[in-house]
Length: 185
Image 1 (cartoon, helix red, strand yellow):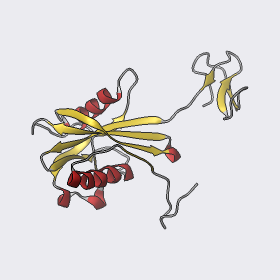
Image 2 (image 1 turned 90 degrees about the vertical axis):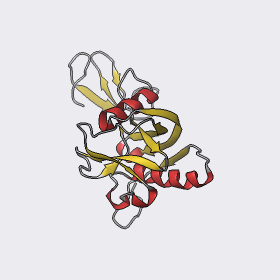
Image 3 (image 1 turned 180 degrees about the vertical axis):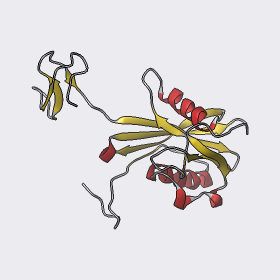
Image 4 (image 1 turned 90 degrees about the horizontal axis):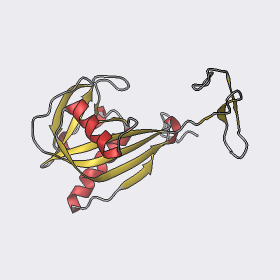
């Protein structure tokens, strides 16, 4: 950030009085510009024994499979964001059942919130951000072609939990890893 969005003057990057992290500060109008993680919200749509996945038409990871999800907008609830993204990406008619996974990605300043949802009909089709949408049985999931670790984590937990018909909330942190699988700070 170079300029204040309030007055247009140049900002400085320093720790404000009473804080412990550096922030962008406008010394002209005294505004502190806080930067916070982005929320990615979506659904795990289920139809009988199958889950609905979207093949991404946009970067990152164009051509790979994911659950319908995207960035939450201002003025909407988590549930509204999850349903909106599912509609935009898969034109899916869903009923949210429960929050299912909360995944922190501190290395890219994101938090995923994914809901378990019941697909109400089969009238889904690819939206502008999807090349394709399909229902998959567990054994047909394209595991090697999933777009994100968060989606793999959520799907694996779902299929494990389904065996016991018990769906707790899963909360984890996905760290950045190098090619050898070692965590990078």
